[in-house]
Length: 170
View 1 (cartoon, helix red, strand yellow):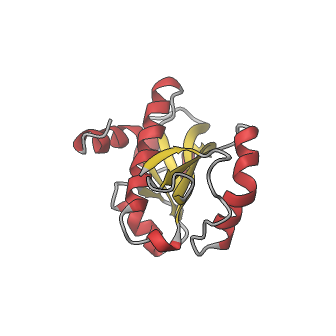
View 2: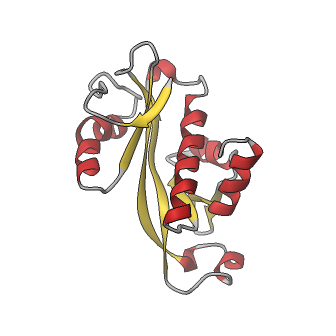
């Protein structure tokens, strides 16, 4: 198995994670976002059939108002908006769910965000969890909920570095 940027060689049509908006994004929108430099899509492909997509995630940039963060963090930040990395989507094909592929993709997304932050400073990676199960998944890796938006979570780059170092993944 291998994680790489999506290409036209990947079989987007056969991907089905069971969530139609995520399937639709991969099949019809991801290519447009790539061309317009709005988001990057990374796929986990099968080693036996390289075009087969096991799962995918997207990374983009977003801006958040620093006042939406926990008060103890706000004291240390400049007033106004912060540019952050956004883990926009993460999905696994139905036939591969429950096998650890989501964790594999999440760690790769954290690593890519952290490495990018070394060149273009971003203080955190943000994700919007779709439900309680997804929220628990992200919290297991140190993501923290925004005070007024319980399904929007963040992981600071400092915590990303600690996580990646602890797992010897940088």
